[in-house]
Structures are given as structure tokens and as C-alpha cells.
Length: 226
Image (spheres, helix red, strand yellow):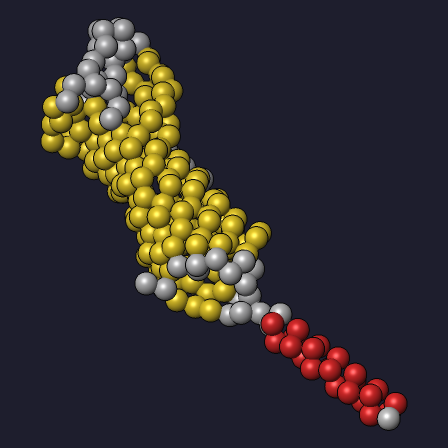
């Protein structure tokens, strides 16, 4: 009788252990995702040229401008476990830099605006620092590369003139962010996109200037498995 009871206990323990292995088995899943959002940009620019045509005095000034950003991305993802995943996607950031609204007598910088779009292919690692059945908190880190294309035009207050200079340049950047997902389907993520490529040389009407790729900060709505 004792042997039968011992055998039953061993079988019960074995079944429970097998159940635990099944429940803890990593969940691998793949699919498509889409994201869109709004944000702000930080634009660094350096103006260099002649301030006075008569004495040809050299003028140089570093300035920074805030900008408006609209972002969209689409691609695929694969989670190796419930905690670690990888995503790969195309990302578009449209950046509007309002620049100067009108000329200043103390500065040779003329009124201008810059409209640009960054087209990049990206790969990000996604690590869930907390995951349950209905909610996930993750940190995101990755890289992206592509091209930034834009146009530099003149403006007077709210009147925008035609583009006076177009430019295209290579872009490489780091992506850093945090995300919260609900039901493994939809959520919000805050992304910082930090370019490290050299500045683009652009010729304006009065001055030549170098324009670095903007830093983008966006809050995006994302959907997975749509």
C-alpha cells in the first residue's frame, strides 16, 4: 500500500513539473506592426558668410530652432521569448523648421523655413522589463540609416515663398525609447531619434550654412498584428 501511495505521489509531482515546463516555455510570435505620431525636433544650424558686401567682414553664428515633426512607420517584428524581441521597419519623419519669420537688421540671416523628410530603414531590439497577460512595459534601442531630403525657402511672417535650395544627404542615427503595450496589440511609445551624420552644407541667399540632421522626439501610437 505504501508503495502504491509513493508511486501516486511521484506521478503527481512529475505531472506538476511537466505542467510548469509547458507554462514557462518561451512564447515565440511574429507579425506586422504600424505606428504614427507627432512630436518636436531640435535643429542645429551654422551660418557663415560676408556680413557687409563693402568691407567683406566675416560673419559666423550658431543657432538652434525647434520644429514640428510628423512620424509614421511600418514593418515586422519577431519575439524570441515573452521578454526579448526584434523589429525591422521603414520610418518617415517629416520635419518643419519655421526658422526666421523676418529679417533682423543686426543679423544678415534672412527670413527662411526648412521642410525636410527623413526616410530610414531601422532595426530595434525590444526588451520587456515587465510583462503580464494584458500589459507590457518595454525599452527600445536600435539603429537606422537612410536619406534626409529637404528644401530651404524664404518666408515673410506666415507667407512662404518657393524653395530656393534643395538638398539630399545620408543619415545614420540611434533610436532610443520606451513603450507600453496593451493586450499585445496596441500601445504608446516615446521615441528619441539621434542622428550622428555630419552636417549638410547648404547655400542660402545671403549666407552659406551647414545644417545638421534634426533630433526627433515623438509620441507614437502603435498597433501589432493588425
